[in-house]
Amino acid sequence: MKQFLLTVFFISLFCLFGFAQDDSKAKSKTSSSQKSKSQSSSKESRVEGIVRLRVTFLASGEIGEIKLVSGLSDELNKEAIAAARKIKFVPAKKDGVPYTVVKNVEYNFKLYTFKESDEELQKNAEITTMPLPKYPKDSNLSGKVKLTLTLFPNGNVKVSDVKTNLPKEFEDNAREAASQIKFKPAIHKDGKEVAQTKEVEYEFKPQKD
Image (cartoon, rainbow, N blue to C red; front, side, top):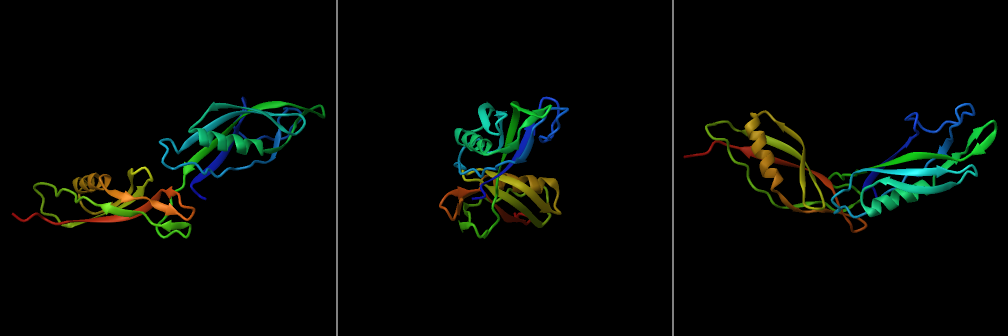
């Protein structure tokens, strides 16, 4: 399930690059790292961010102790630790002899947002209440404001893009109205609620006295 995109960063005390085997500098080389796809509930308040781990890369070529430096939810922390356990690497060597190295590993979780009618969705998000925007005072302009929204499973609405030729006051009023939209979240084919992007359009017309 593509609920989260996950990128991995390895940090040494002296550089921000991946491990590279170099006897003179005594660094480890990672042949491959396991990336995790989180299955955690998208209703959690902190679904995006970085989980930092302190990982021991043993001279034997195995992963040793893993300590949580900073994290997110318990479930995402467990996902990161599980992924770190599966890291494959070439041990660091000095004078041809393998030795143990301790390094920081970061897992960056980013919420995946589905588009409308994505093949992985069982059901699209359904707007149930869509308040109308206020028409700006002392204006006689007509036009449309098109908004791209992200509808989150916890009921939050985020405006990610706005297209209009109308003045900013119209855009602001459209944003305010969109923030009050009520909806039923999109449903993934596995039955879980997920985030989805959706386009809405507001039409402004001069108010008749």
